[in-house]
Length: 384
Ligand SMILES: C[S@@+](CC[C@H](N)C(=O)[O-])C[C@H]1O[C@@H](n2cnc3c(N)ncnc32)[C@H](O)[C@@H]1O
Ligand code: SF4
Image (cartoon, rainbow, N blue to C red; front, side, top):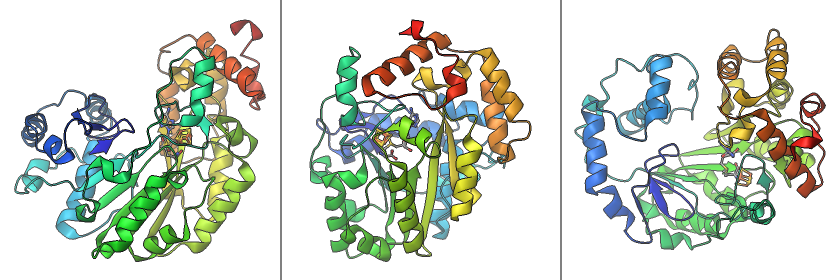
């Protein structure tokens, strides 16, 4: 179950149609609702579920591999073989899940909540260009200035979500920023009091600016598996520009601390959002991470699709040509190069003038200068 800060419950991070809201209906009721049973039945019978189109599209172009089939395999290994596979590893590889009969693997199970992915609040210390106020309170002021009605502060107690975390094997803490919010300390307390701490898998997405408490580090020592996923989008000042409010020296310091403290059951990963600003310089971040000791297979790349203004499809043709030229001999893994080159050649969804206007307005509000100078030459003052 994927829970947004406003307590809307979704099937996963992708499916946009909520199944219910925890303010009105308890999580267990939503999980056993007629609607959920219908989804289960459709999935078990190989029928399509409305809202899951992104996965079906991936499966059609990627030899049966999608987030959905990747997770099927991940949970099959966990439930039937007690094996925690690496997170998202091989997700971009064209290894085939097409011929696996998933229904035969899962239909004997009684449904129970195995995984809760929780946006426990929208309290955040940053206002990254790809984000917005549903997930970051720091965005609210700028959205108001841009004439957008911001989402309100969402900051319930962890208990208010109505989950019994002691009985849930796998918890993901999204945000806001997990290490900036009270709910993570509450989760730490629940986990340290649980008598089955060693069975828990905990996963965190963090912006890397804040370290967790010593109590959280203590819990991480005792659990079955930790996925610590640091979101870094570029190297140095370009990262600070995009991830507004962040400071590169602190990011580096905290990454060093995590890598130094690392235990064998920890999986430290990096998540990078491919967007108009960083597409030409991903190699600099990638090589820096490898030199730091982060394995190549632990760097996850996602295409930015929303906001459309940051989608590389919407770059001007001349800049696209320049990117394609750079990618001829860029030092990046082939699957990432293919992903970028396949996506960038698609038709734009909006005019680049909208991207320029978005960029310029934020620069003005935040008193920032775009450090990606080649891209900046395509963005004119007239677009504000
Ligand atoms: C919303 S953040 C919350 C956790 C934490 N604050 C962080 O930044 O990692 C969760 C993940 O969403 C990613 N993200 C932000 N904006 C996005 C967008 N427009 N499209 C896809 N992912 C995005 C972030 O980079 C991060 O990896
Ligand atoms: S740090 Fe995470 S939640 Fe905060 S603004 Fe950035 S992406 Fe959004």
